[in-house]
Length: 354
Image (cartoon, rainbow, N blue to C red; front, side):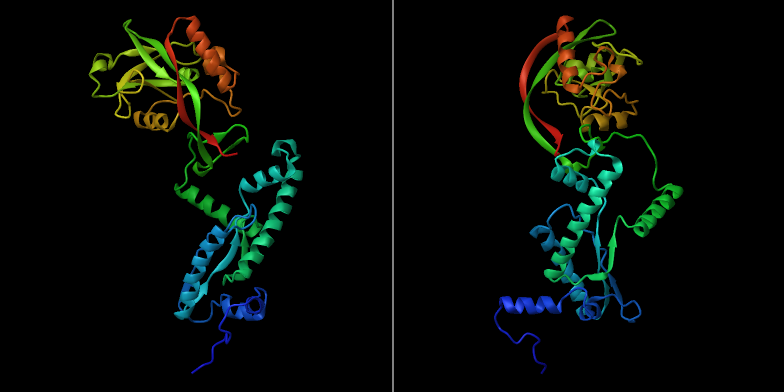
């Protein structure tokens, strides 16, 4: 019977130190034990490692996740397989830019481009080395000699060539689509970077007219978006408005470069109990607007530019920030006698976490 490698029966600081020394990632012993040997003749088992992102200290949750991956890698080695478990670091992305801004208390736009890139490289290198040491210290059995960095020239060459190949095959297309955009940071953001906050806002009941002279009330918290309205919809089961279907609704605000009326249609997404039960669908107030525009094949109008200001299509509101335009639109509608009532409401709105 073989003797155990660890004769000590209790965990101690000295034992932990001894194990860490034997597990030193750059040692020959470690490389022999965990390094990938493609010519070993054993069945291959490849771990497609999701590379961690070094935008700060590697927290316990991330370490725990990679420890679970490590359990799988070690179990496959025990089954006699040649395991490729590379250590990689994702060094691309906006988080490191945000970290540099936070550390220096300066926005990216205030820097010379090369100066800011240099700060990003220096900062991410510091975090990369700290993360590598943590990974080795907790005992991950990665092949550190096969380390890959996503900002390395060879890695970028591979990823870019793959994208080009997919584009040529038609698997990647170029199209104009609405995105979640942060006008303060000047960049698109992911769904995971959106938070929801509560705030009080005004629900404005705006008087519209049909092309046949009938009055209808549309409730909205965003009167500045009337200029981007593509269709007015009611629920198909709402008996109050069946006579309006197919008629035209005249926009109650001045617009530039587009028609001044839209068709009234039905759509099941309308909440009949909200406001008057008549909904204006704009490009783009929320996710439902995006879905309806795509479903009905409507042509979108860009009402807000990349700086968060109203575009020329909004006529008298052009150049105003969204908040300023909302206030001004309400005033214009009030002066024209186009508002039946204004009610303060609490609502949840999406905001950038930054």
